[in-house]
Structures are given as C-alpha cells and as structure tokens.
Length: 375
Image: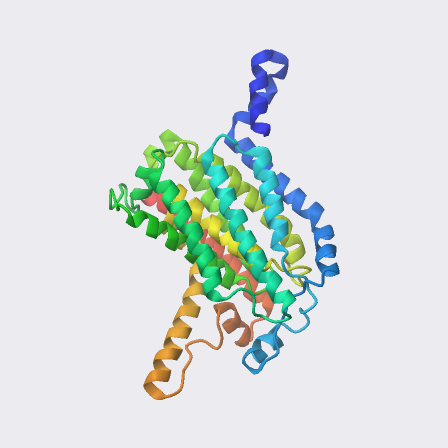
C-alpha cells in the first residue's frame, strides 16, 4: 500500500521525499520494523485470548512419551497456536510495504495462509481431543501436497515464470545444470514445499529454537532475493536476474521482524508456542521463496539446522525399523529425536541447546550466502 505513495511525487516537488517508497531496501527495513512492532503490540492480547480458550501445550502422558513429558514438564499450561501472531504480523506488514502489483507477493501470502490454516486445524483438534492426536499424518501431507501441486502447476504454466522454474541451479554453478527439467519441475516444487514445511515443524520443540533459526534463514533469503532483482549484481555473481524478486526481500524482512517480535514472547521460559499454525506456514514459505528466486538447493545450506533436525528423525526411524527386522528389536542411533532432544538428554540445558543451534543456524546462513561469491 505505501509503495504507491511515491506516485504523489509527480504532482509537485513538495512531496518529493515520498520518492523513497520506491526503493526496496527502504521498504524492507520498514517492513521488518512494522512486523516486529505489530507482533509485540498484539502479543499480550493474543496470549490472553489463547489462555481464555485454554489452548495449552499438551505434553503427553503415555509410556511412549514419558521421556518427552519429563523434558517438557511445567509447559502444559503454556498457550499453543501462537503462530497466528507471526502470520498476522507478517501479513499486515507485507500488505503495507510490498508492491501489490507483483504476483510473487500474493503467491507467497497464499502459501502462508494455506499452511497456517492447515496447522491451525491440527492444533485445534489436539486441544479439542485433549491429546496429541490432531490431523493424521496423511491429512497433513495431503494438504501440503495439494498446495505444492497448485503452486507448481501455476508457476509451470505461467509464461512469466515457466522458464525459471524449469531450470535447475546448484549453489556453486554459474549456469543452470539442467536448462529444462520439464514437468519434473512441478514434482520438485511440491517436494520442496512439503520437506521445508515439515522440517521447520520438527525443529519446533524448544523455547525459541525454531523461530530463532527462521530469523537467520529469512535474512539470508532476503539478501538473495535482493541480489536477484539487481541486474548488475546478478550478472556479477552469475545468478539469474529475476525481475521484481526484490519484493520478496520485503516479505523476508517482514518475516524477520515478525520472528523477532514472536521471540520476545517465545524465549525461555516461553509465554506462548507457535504450534503447527506457525511452523508449517513458516517452513512452507521459506521453501516457496527459495523456489521463486531459484535457490532451492541453497536452501538446504541456509536452513541447515532444519535439514539436520529432519534427517535425525529419518535416520532414527529407518535404523530402528531395519534393526528390528534384522535382530527382532529396534535399536537407536540417537537418544531421542528430533536432534535437539538428543543433546538435552546428553545433559545440555534447554537454553544451551537453543543458543548453540542458533549459532549453527547463523553459520549455515553465512555459508549459504557465501555460495553466491563462490560461483
């Protein structure tokens, strides 16, 4: 909305300063500040509302979850579904500061709201049923796959984006390694959406962990989106020049600001948890942004913590099933997964795990940005 204020400069020099609203870098900074302020302002009211609804974190009490219940003792009264705060702050800030004429903005917001609604349904069912069981795994996967198919088909069929989504870029290559993957592009996009959404969801298990890692990933993707929108920078760094990709910098900045605002309430000891409402939505939009700026493989580096957390679960489950078939009883690689719980059982405090994972997330983001120059 504020983007259009620069048009007023055409009607007199007195309004000349409004020309600043043309610039992506200015609007990106303001989007971050706006999202943070909205999040901090609305946070107390949303937390009170969730408490009134008795939407608390269910820890679980059956034998299989006894260890997790012990680790999360005392958090059963902490409101969940706090991801709605991130979604609202991010949406409001993006609508205020991004150029609404760019379809990338609307596509990313659509993905955010789709996955937030899916996560909300899952969180709500857990609360209503007084158990950990919300939507089934297949129901959540169906919602994610459906979104991936819709987005993939739209990008593949749209003449403005069809060529770019068919190209496969690798972080250290100066040119696409495959110029046209054909219809596999839709499958690739779907895989990225599902994988990134679930990876962030798995990481959301400690106070401030997921949102802290999200902040660094959003900042790195925002820089990459800005570079992709600048013809000279894109040519110098040997990446594809993507017109209007800079508006995704505004979105990433808004996510950065909303994340900081949410962290104000989610830091240890957390006053609110994001729940699937936030984690599924955040993960999905990180994947979509990476697709739109042709950096989906680089996302594996930038979001390294999310990748490691998801990989730990896959390794644990696969090894357990394989050894059970081989020896009659399942064996474990880690004490517990996702990986943050493994270190907690090794004796690290929750704060130590979170801060050390934040440090690693920052290093992953910096390495991801470094791949631009290494091309």
